[in-house]
Length: 247
Image (tube, rainbow, N blue to C red; front, side, top):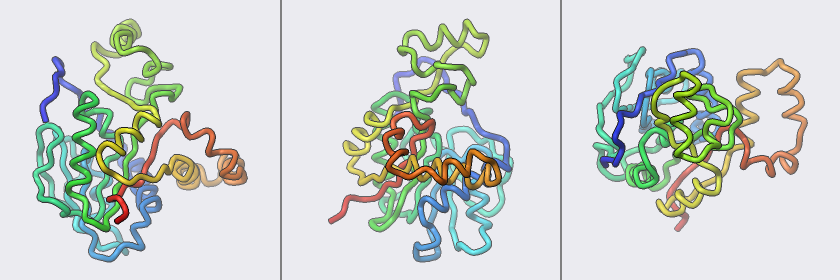
């Protein structure tokens, strides 16, 4: 779906392949892919460097048939999976074709709220009736905006963000649309998706995988969920497991 943008959105692909492996392992855990019937038909929307698609395509124990799409081809690894170039948010696949769909830090790049809603509707359309989808998006209320590394950038009103970016010498146009938790959940409901907030689980998994021996991981793992759940609206990354509504 075309948007009303008058500028070209940048790809913002993450090229650190080691970090992509950590991210893929977290997605595997949070979706519970080991429990899904195999082979798993898996789609990654916005594959960037290709690291996550490659991880699942070459997984030692999961049998995955992996398809990846992107509007920019920035792949560094290309083996093991099928790739399709796309324009906009429409997906070139039939209904209910995938058992698992991954949208990892993509929705903030697709355009305005209308385009973001179509992105979610397309996930629902291509997801199999018993399938699961993973959605991650930067929280608008994160302290440091992750694409441009500026404090409070996404806190500002829309009209102030690009001038702040230019003032700091980081670019000309702020081309991302991070979301806040309740705003995203309203959008998920409007798209007809059943969702489960996994912000706390994702937070724990990130520390377990990337900071296993660090003191901060021990503190986080010792903190009960009852104390962490109220923090979900300000956790830097909003993470959701999606599926079709229950019958």
